[in-house]
Image 1 (tube, rainbow, N blue to C red):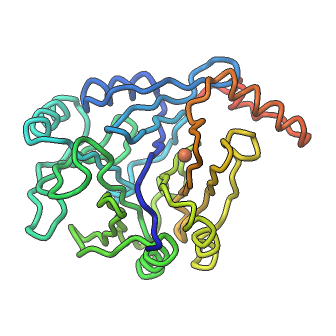
Image 2 (image 1 turned 135 degrees about the horizontal axis):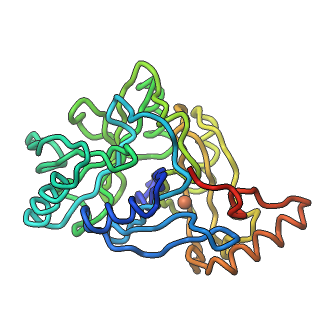
Image 3 (image 1 turned 30 degrees about the horizontal axis):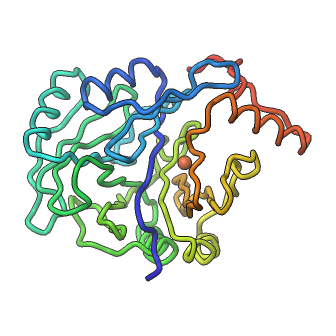
Length: 297
Ligand SMILES: [Fe+2]
């Protein structure tokens, strides 16, 4: 059966990395996986973990107001009622903008959920799921769509995710493992959707069998291919294939079909050595941000 298998990782924009780390670790209660550096050793981004899913807190962030639509939004499912309640309490004490606990309708994939903004105005959500892989994981991401039927066609046909009943005015689709992708219809895309911020993206895992067909369908169905800069930089292990692309609303996405090895966490030194070497071969250098010369902000 054709279709994206899982939601794997997301990168969200942050302007103050220390503040974001503190918020996600101490308030939301996510463990840190690693801190990534620029070529000169200055901070670049930090990965925290929602179970096995990486949430990248990515500098330099964006200087734009919160999106009025409630999307883009990133939701973390937690494993138990106790954890849900204690996390909500901490968030409420954390001096960030938040809503109230919402009870899911009987056909909703959510038992209950709680929306809040992180200190960088990213819309976030904590939820308890009725189904899904279990434990703590990225439950869903919700994107803005200026043309909802075009976006729905794109996700169901190019990404092969399965439509679910609408929930809270959002159109939902499920991955094979029951993680979810949502679409929120908007009259105009917010600055959050249009500006992204560096390395801000949402990544899905797909099978090797589906990869080529999906790449073709992404452009046929109104997406825009952006190639694979990591392959060009010599950072893909043998057999791993990946594509960065925009959906029809310029949400920045990635699909990856893994090979035997995983080089995602190459040391920073080795990563920058390979990037510099491969770019030199192509007559290119690294940007001032990558080098660490540009002060994030
Ligand atoms: Fe990625």
